[in-house]
Image 1: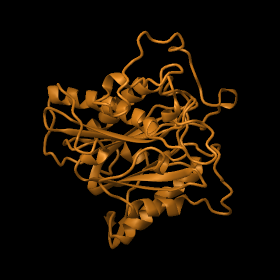
Image 2 (image 1 turned 180 degrees about the vertical axis):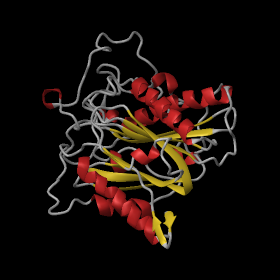
Image 3 (image 1 turned 60 degrees about the horizontal axis):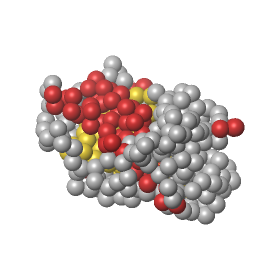
Image 4 (image 1 turned 60 degrees about the vertical axis):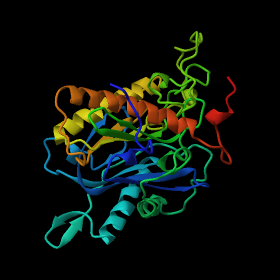
Length: 337
């Protein structure tokens, strides 16, 4: 199988999806939303030890909701869960949601990352700003969007570098497309030792995050554990949150398996991943727009691609990060070796 990117190399190469970002430079935080053109099969897998979530129980295959309207990734720690209310408000204005008699209830699962200690001004007064950021993110939604220091990744940090918002896509030989969106804010590192080389290098397509490959030989410090804020690391201060999507036709149970497979990309791109101090989580979406029901070999390719695409999106998040005022950590582009 030969992996190729979709036309945009973004999650929106998956038909039926749009992405909107909203952020505040002074706050150093923001919101990203994935909007579904139609109610979409979805699930979730949490493997980090410190998650912050909303409406995730309904995504389990044994529960009755069959389609959701949007997924929210937000900064702000627990305060950021307000973003989903802003997304709901915008969708309700548009008449979108689960119909109950004469009411429409938008189904909007959400996850948050911790970016409260990153140099931004968090003195927001009585109410946190995330509800309005969520509303604005919906109104900004498009099939084309920026990555790096934007949206939910605008205040993200990794071990030694700024994190960010990343996305990537893969077109499989079967015609199925897989896409990933990630806000990369892990406790661990995405680069090998203190080098510029990304752990995700084997999965890179072209030079989408620098084209450096692996260093040869591997540096002596490759296996060393570099952690963000090692001396003060606490549960909830980190977290990589993501969405994996496909245009294949999947059941809710198969979508759950897709979310599980996408976590392999965390392990391929971050060292260490899934720590007790991270709330690592992947939402999955299956729009079914391709009309393809993957069988046997095609299903194996789909799940492999989920991990590879997620690893690339994580590297692209850090690769695309840009300098901002009062940054606590450097950007990848400033590294010299």
